[in-house]
Amino acid sequence: MSNTKDLSEAEIAAKKERKATKKAAKAAADATPIEESKPSEQDEKAAKKAAKKEKKRKAEEGVDGVQDNNTKNENQPKKSKKTPPASTQDAENFFKENNMTVSDSSIKPLLKFDELDVEKALVKPLTNFEKPTPIQSITWPCLLQGKDTIGIAETGSGKTLAFAIPGLSRHVLSDTSNHTPSILVIAPTRELAVQTYDSIHKLDVTPSICLYGGVSKEEQKRAIKKSKPRVVVGTPGRLLDLVNDGGIDFSNIKYLVLDEADRMLDQGFEKDITAIIGNTPPSRQTAMFSATWPQSVRALAATFMRDPVRVTVGSEELTANKRVDQVIETIDNPRMKEQRLNAHLKSIRKEMGNARVLVFALYKKEAGRIESTLRRGGHAVGSIHGDLSQQQRMKALSDFKDGSVPLLVATDVAARGLDIPNVEVVINVTFPLTIEDYVHRIGRTGRGGAYGKSITFFTDEDKSHAGELMKVLREGGYEIPEGLKKYPAVIKKKDHGSYGAHFKEIDPDAKPKKITFD
Image (cartoon, rainbow, N blue to C red):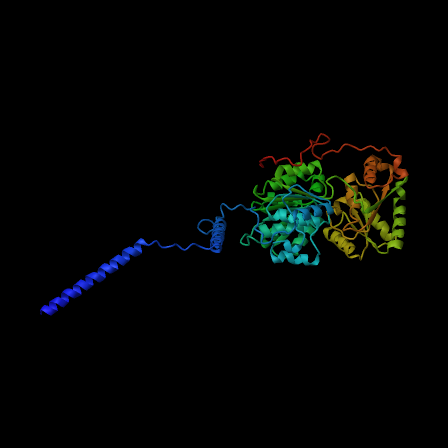
C-alpha cells in the first residue's frame, strides 16, 4: 500500500512538473514578438486599383447601387469607350488643312469613323464614306458631350448626319421607353425638311415624321397620333400651327436643331422660331447650323443657347467659292436674256455633254416662263418653284439628281438648303435680291473639291448690287468686267429684317440672356 501511495505521489509530482513546463513555454511564446507579413508592392497596387474602381462604380450607380434619375443631368457627357487619337498637333494640322476654327480648344476632332462611340445601327450608313467631313469631325465630339453647338458651313457639307447621329445616340436610343418627341429639327423649306427627314428615316432606328404646309393638317395630326414619333422635322409655320392647335407636344424635347438658321431669319421666321422654342424645355440641348454668321443669327444664338461651341468651316464672312469660275455678262436689253441663255446652253452641251446645269430665276412666274421656253426649244428641263405641287417639285429634283433631266430651273426660295450634288454650271438669268443669295447660288457648283462655273446676266436694273458684286469678284482674284465698271461701286449698309439699319452689333461670345416665354 505504501508503494501505491508512493507511486501516486510520484505521478502527482510529474503532472505538476509538466504543467509548470507548459506554463513556462506559453509565457516564453507570449514574450516573443511575431513578425507581421507586409504586403508586396504588387499587392498594394492591386488594392489601390480595386478601390478606385469601386469608388467609380459607386459614383456612377449612386450610394446604394441605384441610379438616381431625378438628379441625373440629361446632358451629362456620354462616357466614351474610345479616346480620339488626335493629338494637339494633329488637331491643329487638321483645322489648318480644312480652314476651320473652333471656339473651344479642348475639343479634338474625330478623324476616323471607328473613333465614333455610338450604336452600331448609326455607324452602318457611314461605311460608304472614307472619313468624316470636316463639320462632322468636330461637331460629333461636341454634341456627344452634350454641348450646345453652332456649325457654320455651306450646304452639302454633311451637316445632317453631323447633328442627327449624336442626337439619336444621346436622346433617343438611350431611352427607348419614351414615346413622345425627343428631337425637333426646324428647317426653312419643305424640300430641306423632306431631305433631312429622309436622311434620318433611312437610319431606321426610331419613328420619325416630317411636317410642312401645303398638306392637310388634320391628316398630319392623325399621323402623329398613330406613329408616336421620337423625331420631328418640319417648317416653322406648320410646326407652330400644330403646337397651337394641340396637335403636337414639345414639352419633352431634349434636342433642338435649327438648320439653315440664316435663311429662316431672312424669310421672316424669327417670331415663329421664338414661339416654338418657348414650348420646349430650357434644359434641352441645342444645335444650330448656318451657311453664314450674320448679326441676326448671332443675336438669335445669344438669346437661347447656353455657352455654345462655335465651329466654322471656311470663313464666317461672306466669301464666294474660289473653285467657281465667275463669268459676269452685262446685257443692255433685258429681252436678250433668253437668247443669251440658249446660246450658253448650246455651248455647254457641245463642250460638256449632259453636264448638270442649274438655272436661277428670281420669281416663280419667271421660272415657269423660262422652263416653258427651254422646253419649246427642245431641252429636257425641270423646275422647282412655289407654283408647283410638292410631288412635282420632288420629281423634278429627283430627275435632276439622277441625270435623266440635266437642266433645272429654280427660284432662291425653293432651292435654298437643298443638297443638289454634281452641279457643273450655274446660270443666273436674273440677279438675286441680295449679294448673299448670289454667293449661295454660285456655291451650288464647285463642291467636294471639284471646280465649277457660274454665268450671271447683269442689267441696269441690278445696278444697286454692282458695288457688292465688284467686292466679291476682287476677293476672288477676278478682274472687274468693263461692262460692270460703268456702275457706281457703292455698297449699301446692311439692314436687319427686324431692326433696320440701326441693328445693334452683338458680341459673338456674349452670354445668353434669360428670357421668359408667355
